[in-house]
Length: 404
Image 1: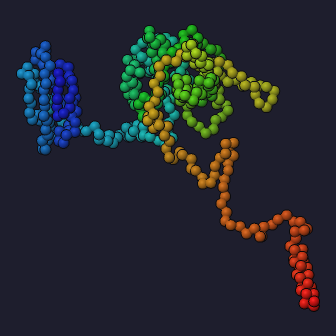
Image 2: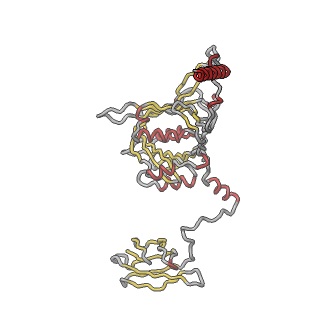
Image 3: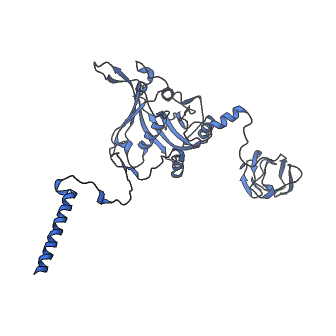
C-alpha cells in the first residue's frame, strides 16, 4: 500500500506496524504510530491521505481529517505522546556509572590504544575458529572475542559491525566465516567514528596453516609490543593496492599502545610478513604471516647472541575483496589535533641530513674596529710614521719651489 502523510511517502506491507517520522512542517513535525489493515486481504493497492495537527494545551496528537481513496481500506490511528526530535542533543548522564562510560567515549588529544573485536559468521570452519583464537592470543588484552555465530555480511551490509563497534567501543574487527564461494575467509576491518573505514578479505591456505599450540617451546608474554617487519616491494608501492592496505591494517592491529621508550627485555617476539614479487599471467602473490620468538643466548662477550624460533601461528593468506576508504573520511581520520602539532621555531630548519640550521639577523657592523691578523707590516703605528714621513717630504718640496 502506498501511504502519504504530510509530504512523507513510503511503501508498506499489509497489516504492518511502522513508525512514521514526518518531515518538519511547522507544528506537525512530530512522529506518530499507525496500524494500517486492508479488508479483505486480497484487495488491490489503495492510497490513503492523512493530515495531522497538534493542540496547544496537550501533547497528544489528533487526527484532523482522513480521506479514503477506496471504501475497503480501514485505518486505526494510535494516539501517542510527543517524542523528542532526533536532532536534539542526547540527555545528560544521570548516574555516576553512565557518566564514566560517557567520559570514556569522548574524543581525546591522545586516543586510547586500538581494541579489536573478534567474531565469526553464521558458518565458520574449524580452521577459521583456530585462526581467530590465535589472533586473539596475540592481540590480548586489547581484544574482545565473541563466541556465538552472527548473521553478518560485511561487504553487503556493515550495519551490524558498526553497531558492535559502537556498543563495545572498538576500532578494529576480525570477522571469520566460511562458504563455498569464499572458503576459510578472514575479513579485517577498521572503523572511524564507529563507521566502516576500509576492509580487506584474506583467505587462509589450509595445507600450510599451523596454530600456536603446534609449535613447541616458550611463548611470548601477554601484552607485550611486537616488532613488525615487512618484506616485499608490493607493501611499499607508491600506488595504493591490496598489499599496501594489508600493511596498514596489520600495523594498526598489532602495534599496541604507543610509548616513547621501550625496554629491551620487553622485545620478546617479532611478526614477519612477506610477499613475493608480482608476475604477469600468474595469480596474485600470497601474504606469508609468521611469528618468531626472540631468544638471547650467551656469546662470551658483552652483547648476547640473538636467535629466532618460530612460535606460531603460521598462516598463508590469499588476497580477496577490498574496500578502500573514502577520501573525505580518510582525511578526517588522519587529522591531528592542534595540541599535538610541533611548534615551529622561527629561522630554524632541518636539512636533508638531519642537521639543525639556524639564521641569525644582526645589525650593521663597524668594520673599522674589526680585529685582523696581527702582522708587523699592518701595525697602526707604522702607518702613522709613514704618513708623517710623506708629510715632511711634501713640506721640503714646497720650500724648494719657493726658493726657485
